Image 1 (cartoon, rainbow, N blue to C red):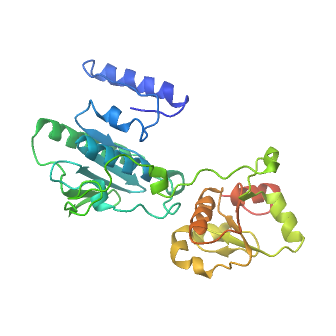
Image 2: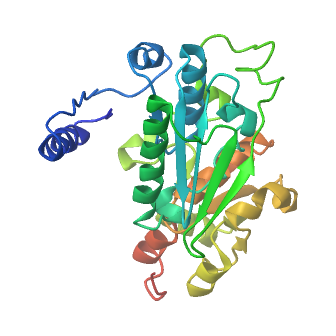
Image 3: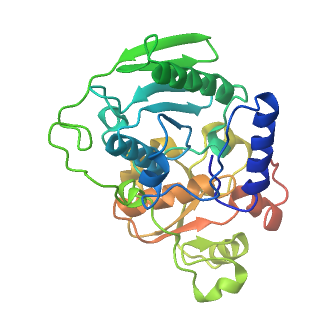
Length: 311
């Protein structure tokens, strides 16, 4: 168990106490630090199986590579909306996570749980499957999900299974691996550090952001701006900034060429999260004259146009 901030520490202690209450013979060791390329190999060294319940691509690739390099099986699980996935990676002769996903998706195009949502019971279901696979691997019984990829559809209450094969050209577990030590996984996944804060930092706006009041001032002044709304069509029907153009975030990779390159683009969504991802993606494909509307349409309604409904 690991946590990355002070808020997580009491939760970690509470989890330890609850587990102890259920089974006093279980030893829980908490690590009050974030998993990184600097400590992963050392942390994994004393354990037989690693259960990956992480929620971001840099850490998933880090866990996978550390498991391959230390020879530890990876009981993998992931969830999104109403679907879950599970498998066992990085065993002798079996595929690893990179055999299934050689490259991460373009940065910023996968919605977070806050944006996409997760059915509340789903983590428990997939977590139990991971725990089951860990027990089977440790005891050497049954048929673990090695070379098998389990997909659970909660809405239809159906399980599907895909066959996975070890990729001989895999850069980590293949015949001639090129990744022989842990790398910078945020760089590998295209995750950039936060932009530098501009001189107007006192207002809490950085050089890649614009607030609603400033946007309204510039629109009233006749500045030529292209407002890109990356929400879903049903959201756009509820409220919008007059003159904005709708291209949902998921469609942006195939439609970004519709955007002008000679006009400043203001990315906008409900609260600013998805539009920040859109901005990050557009930077990777050559756009530079960009800003993200801080606070999104909700901030616009609060400060500029309170006549519009919220959702």
